Length: 223
Image 1 (tube, one colour):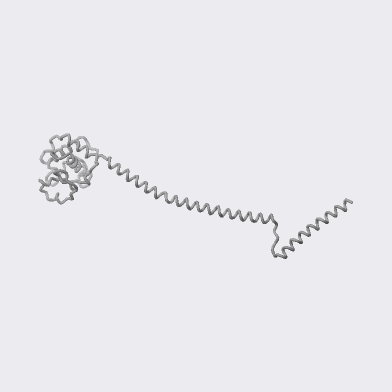
Image 2 (image 1 turned 90 degrees about the horizontal axis):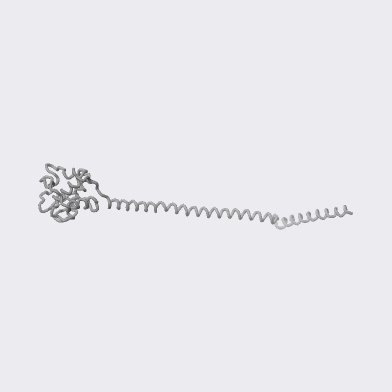
């Protein structure tokens, strides 16, 4: 009895499997398309979606990279501008507070020259005369020390008449000394003036051909 029942179950399973196979082949023959199991379709769609999401992520990363590169490319330009401004401001501040260092003897010599050349002139006029001497020290066309500039010989005479006539040997006033101290700070360099003269008493025609920068009191300052 048991054997008969077991054989019946086996026959039923075989028949069911055959019937399903025939249905699938019939559907394929009728539609011309292969019947795909639902789980296979799900796996295929997931793989396609995964590929699409991967491409989207790559595109987003590329877009972000392009934006980052553009931002990084712009930074050096701003840095250069800021650097230039900083250097320019630094040089401006340094020039504003720059001062010339000379010995005590040279300060006294310059003050005595200022006293002799600008006696009777305003304090501003005295500072201007001291500035001319310092401008000559800086210029490549003149000696490079205060002493050598003041005692320079041009032709058969000294460049400054007080050295020629001995007036430079007289003591300097406190105002002349203070004028030298101010000139040494280089806050006002008279646009590089290296000459000055009094047009009321000067006879040299050459100096009158120089470019005039300013006039202070009885002195005309030139380049």
